[in-house]
Length: 486
Ligand code: ZN
Ligand code: MN
Image 1 (tube, helix red, strand yellow):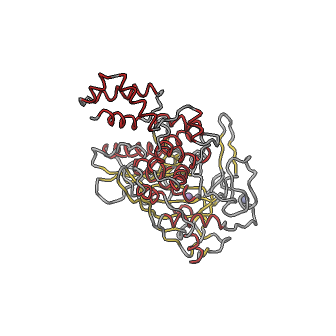
Image 2 (image 1 turned 90 degrees about the horizontal axis):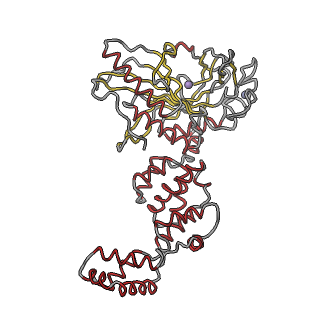
Image 3 (image 1 turned 90 degrees about the vertical axis):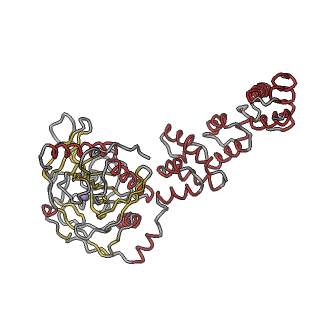
């Protein structure tokens, strides 16, 4: 769970009203309206064609896979999916937009309504959605440092883009962060996007206003654009709420405008006056026929929905997993999948969860690879957990065994033996060792008979020394008490 942040409205008569507009690049083989490859990081302007360059006479076609991804997101968020929809032209000029318009959706979005259940601290809050629609991405302007000119890369022009607009249901930076993280997780579970903020496949704009606590009216809002990390988003919201409270306290009005957040200086700057929908002169895209989604298609897509994060979190808890461990697992799909493989063949889910959340996760973090690639299969991890349960190795030494099992196929017993870490649970052997220690330490043995707890520990230490630390401590305690009473 992300750390809870301070609420900047605390101690003021105001509450904040926050809405998020999220753009997600969809993971498809080709672009939204042409056959060009949809791929990040290629040589500039190598993934283009007459359609995405906006050349005269070229005609767009709709990418079926992008529609399917969008519908699946809509279904996962409980939206109404339009059976009949269309695309529209959103007109504006920008150097990275060769057609001078973006194909988007105006008054008939593909998905309507819905919402997302979000965990905020220990509470659950539902954040409503206004709409989800499909559009195409623009190209990218590159302003090289120290050079007077700017360059344009159109590889990104026409990449399928999902715009997810929330209702203004969030009240604090913490809630906004929690919503965005959950939205990202749902996209990752659906496997429709990489959601990589650094590469720009998930981008977020924020709308912020304040109002007297409990007033229910929507007041003038500002929009903060182009935020590129969770922390920046939370910081920007916090800063903007504070700025608006200070304005109101000074008797001034909040002006509707678009702002840019400077994460280094921690302040917002005016980018431009806010434009309204009518400024864009939307009209139906004349080169694309309306799109119809029939029931059969819709139902087949519904059938492809995976178990979603919240449901998985609850199922893990019903297996007896502690909330903390369930949360860490669910937030990393690969880690959770690894855990599930182990649980299938082991009756100790919480023990497996401990190992995955600690040892396995540490390894994936250190090496920057997924759990499936750290060099130990779930089955071999289970064999280690069973060796601990069976008293073959102590919990303390098991971490060394784990490390030695990485990157090979050696059986756990062989690894324990080769490290000399075997824990001796042989009854006859331990019984003899305990008897010897009692004979050698008659005073301590007497103390135990009189009920002195400390002396049990002393005798235990002697047995450990005699067996070079390999005696099963649980069994030794039992045998001492058995032989001396108390
Ligand atoms: Zn193209
Ligand atoms: Mn958009």
